[in-house]
Every structure is written in structure tokens, then in C-alpha cells.
Length: 398
Ligand SMILES: Nc1ncnc2c1ncn2[C@@H]1O[C@H](COP(=O)(O)OP(=O)(O)OP(=O)(O)O)[C@@H](O)[C@H]1O
Ligand SMILES: [Mg+2]
Image (tube, rainbow, N blue to C red; front, side, top):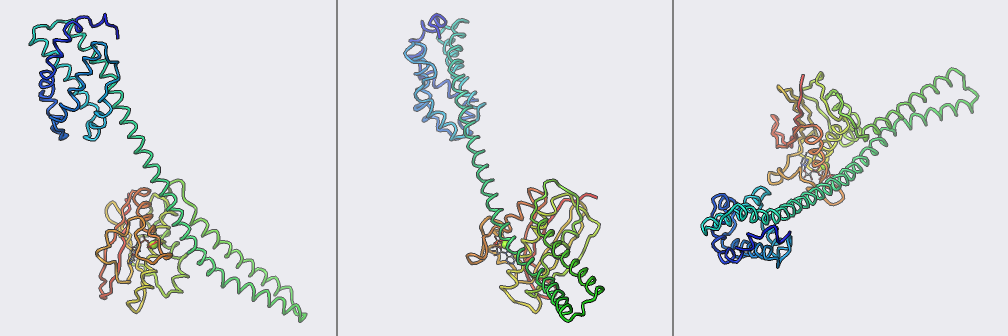
């Protein structure tokens, strides 16, 4: 800044700076300024004595060339103070411009006002504001970046959680594959023994041999299909696709049926809507069902309350949404934890048995990926048995 550019201002600088308190009072008492200070509960006396007076001192320091532009000692603290009070950039602008207005008003009252003085006062203020606003915008930008980083980190944590949950599901599924393979394996083994036996007796006829080989081929094909089914199950869908909701439920039940039967748990289908198709991610949806089913299984095995262990599934079509209700007769969820079950890492299971991710994952899939909602309530059945009911609502359009 050139001294020559502000000669008028320099000539009255001493006169103006001797009236600093006057400028200060005018500044903080403009209605727009008061409104901002008031809105953000800023203590006016503190604002005046800690920041405003120092900012004016600095202003005159710049005019008298004893201070450099952009070197205001209280500015950094002032920024932090404003940010702590949630002052937005436009509110900061209001505060800044009224400092100038206060000084210009005073020049009129002192009868020293002139166009040149007006422009020179404005010029020094503008130079200062430019720096202040840039600095403020920059800190806000940094803050946004920090928030973005936190969001990214949370997302990474979610990915890790989902991987853990998926591993747990895979363990469950491997048990199912093992189960589903046991019977065909023993069938193949029996057929092979039979062939061997006939061969040793010299009674192996070609018809018998060919028929048995065909049987083995069929069984092996089935076994290979089992693997494909399970593999598909864990393959996340990249694109949304249209699928029949009932097929998806049937398919998931088929995959689990063996291990449920072993635990004497029966799936019972109530209302069905076979023609309803949904846009979404069928595999993710199937994983949601799997999580809810395996929770029901855990609860049914833990609280063996009634004669039959049941998981009921019912779909109901409303005008614009489809409700999928999955309930069990395992006694329900204690009221004091009912609102916590969807929280990440909330579990009532002993260590090693549950991580508390299952339902959190369900909620993410249903709400974020499928635009639906999921909630839980306790249910009393007409036969006086009770249990937990999970309800998934999905948007549906004919
Ligand atoms: N059908 C149910 N009956 C009773 N309690 C349930 C039922 N489903 C869920 N819960 C309760 O909700 C908690 C949270 O379930 P969630 O599936 O999120 O975690 P988890 O099953 O404990 O562990 P994870 O699924 O990670 O192996 C469970 O620990 C259990 O207390
Ligand atoms: Mg679970």
C-alpha cells in the first residue's frame, strides 16, 4: 500500500484514532451487528475489549505504517472465537463492513468528511477485509475437509465391519454346504462301492454300470450347483436389478433349511405376494434375511420356550410399500434394549458368539441401498406365544 494513496486519511489519523472508543460504540451498536452478536450469544463487552479495540488499533497501525497488512495480532484468535460461535461468512462480512461504516459516520460528525477520505478509509478496510474473509473461508474449508476425512474414516470402518460380518456369515454358510454335501457324498460313495462289488464278482453289466454313472453325474451336478448358489449369495450385486421378493425369500430359506431343521426350527410362510417385484440388490437383501434368521435361530435355541420353534414370514402389500415381517417365538427382546439392537457392536451374546454387527448391517442395506426402513417390535401371537418381529418396509411401485 502506498503512502500517497491515503494522504487524506493519514492527515486525520491521529484525530480519528483518539476517538477509537467512539468508533467502537458506533460499530457494535448498529442494529445489524447487534443482531449477529445477539444471535450467537457473543458477549458484547468481551467482543469490544478483546477483539474490536485491537482490530481498530491495528487499523490505525496500518494507516500510520507501523503495522503490515495481514499481520493483525488478534486475528487468528478472533477467527477461532467466531467459528466457535458458528458465525457464517456473510455474518462476518456484516461485522467487518460496519466497522468501516462506524468510522465514516464519525468523519461526518467531526466535519472532516470528504469523498477522498471516504475512499481512503474504505480502501484500507477493503485491503484488510480481503485477507480476513479469505482466512475465514480457508478455515471453514479446512473444517469441511476435516469433516470429510472423518466421514471417509467412518466409511472405512463400515467396510471392515461388513467384512467381519460377511466372514461370520460365510462360516454359517460353509456349515450349510457341509451339511448339504454330506448326503450326496455318501450316496456317491455307496454307488461306487456297489460298482466295485459287482465288478469283483464279475457281475458288472454295462446297463447297470451306465445307469450308475449317470446317477453319479447328476449328484455331482447338484453338489456343484450348491457351491454356485452359495458363491452367488456372497457376490455383491453391482447394479440394481428387478427381482421377485418371494423368490428371494424362498431361496434364502432353501439355503438355510438344513441347518434350521437340525435345530428343529421350522420356517412358516404366511401371506405371500408372488407377483411383487422390487428394484434393488437381491444378494444384499438375502443377506439381510440371513442375519435376521440367524438371530432368530440364536434366540430360539437360547430361550427354548414353546413346543415348536418357529420363524414366521409374511409379506403384505400396502399402497406404495411392501412390508416383510419376520417373527419368531423366542420370547422377544427386553424393552430396555429394543431401541439399541440396530446400533453397531450392540450385542447381548457372549464373546465369540456375536459381534453386534448383524442388525446394523441390515439397517445400512435396507436404508442406504434400498431406500426402505427396518424396525423391530415385540409380538404376542394369537396362541399366546411371544417373540420378536422385524419389519422391513420397501418402496414398491406397480
Ligand atoms: N430375534 C431376536 N430375539 C431376541 N433378541 C434378538 C433377536 N434379534 C436380535 N436380538 C438382539 O439384538 C442384538 C443385536 O443383534 P445383531 O444381529 O446386531 O448382533 P449379534 O447377533 O449379537 O451379533 P452378530 O450378528 O454380529 O453375530 C442381539 O445380541 C440380541 O440381543
Ligand atoms: Mg446377529
